[in-house]
Amino acid sequence: RHTYDGHNWRYINLPIEDIQSIAIASLKDNNKMYSSYDLPQMDRERGYMDVGLYDYATLFNTTFPMNKAERISTFESMSAHAMTLTAVDLDKTGKPLKWKVENSWGSSNGQNGCAVMTDEWFREYMFRLVVEKKYVPENILKVEKDKPVMISYDDPLFGYEE
Image (cartoon, rainbow, N blue to C red; front, side):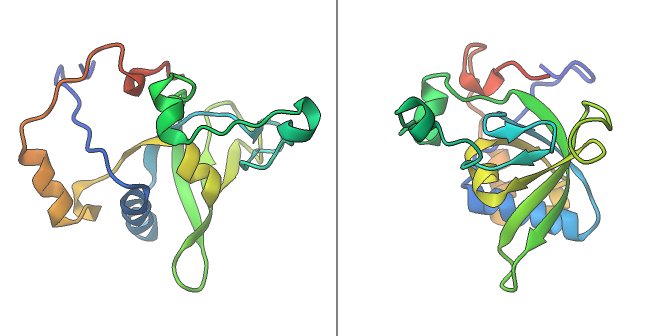
């Protein structure tokens, strides 16, 4: 239940490509967004997030073969921290390369309080994005009219969030 207005939140689970397109449309129109993430593979001091940041395979002689869905279903990965999505770096074809977020940890963390994540990291560890409806395609907005499925309190979607 949303504490401000007392309404239950409604989520639409989308493929990451749709989420990226919606986020890019919003950023191109200079609108920042609430977003939430899990925070593994992060260099907090430098403000950099990349799935290859640490070489666990060599250091610990192990790998972590679970995909995002498997990590979520086993509570290994969940929405753990909210940040403001502020920018995207696109290649010549319009595909995202890097994303920039403003964090709440203060200006002494990262690059003056901001962090940069690779697109691969974004795809693996981004959980929620709150956008204005004007950036959401009509075919996705239609889903909002469907009867929602109530999610239980112990669903991974409601993981701890700073």
